[in-house]
Length: 120
Image 1 (cartoon, rainbow, N blue to C red):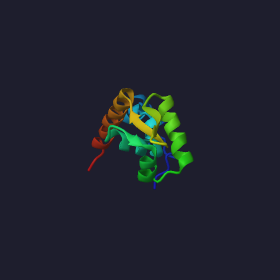
Image 2: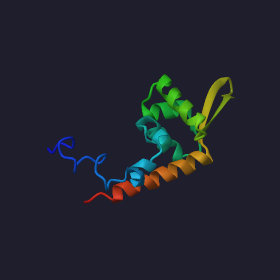
Image 3: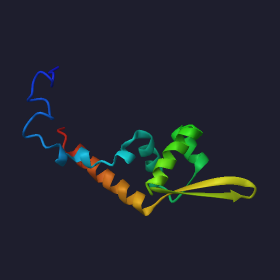
């Protein structure tokens, strides 16, 4: 396999014609691109809302792992978290916000562009 360090033509950072600013991968939202958060948003994108326990079971994430990623998505304004009671049981409902839907659509579009640009 060719070594980019020994061959400057293969190293995108040193090639004068390489313009990484315009590469479609640079437009991918890093908050969404993280595998765990991408998994969460993929589920939330397809539904109006989801119960925390359902999402935990679907993703296979632990309580703590899911809580950490949901916190980052909520902080970014991509999801809303509603805590309420269903009878005497606490329930947490998760919804993708409009900003989250827009960011996810932009991510989907950029990722599709990256995939479409690859040769068959």
